[in-house]
Image 1 (cartoon, helix red, strand yellow):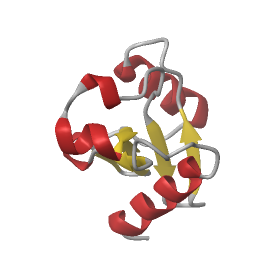
Image 2: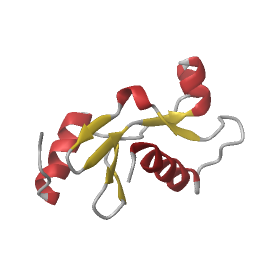
Image 3: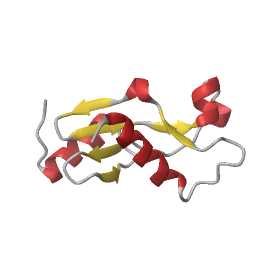
Image 4: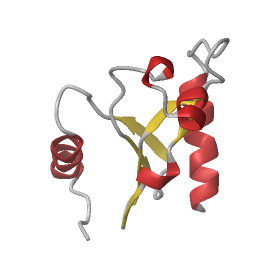
Length: 99
């Protein structure tokens, strides 16, 4: 699985239940992507936010999203903690390899 395929998969999955009428849908903010041996940690927001960086168009309460290469699974992490903590907790639970 290539990174661009993982991005397409994440965006497609997240947009299934997201009203994109005024925002253009959810997109991966690729400049924030973290690569790990097991896959990628993506950060997402609305297309309109990505284009304008105007907070009025952003989505609140969206944590990081992990894409695992091995099984192509997508894991939405909580937003109530710092992203580093959410990622570390996921890696502990899933026994992921660390860089």
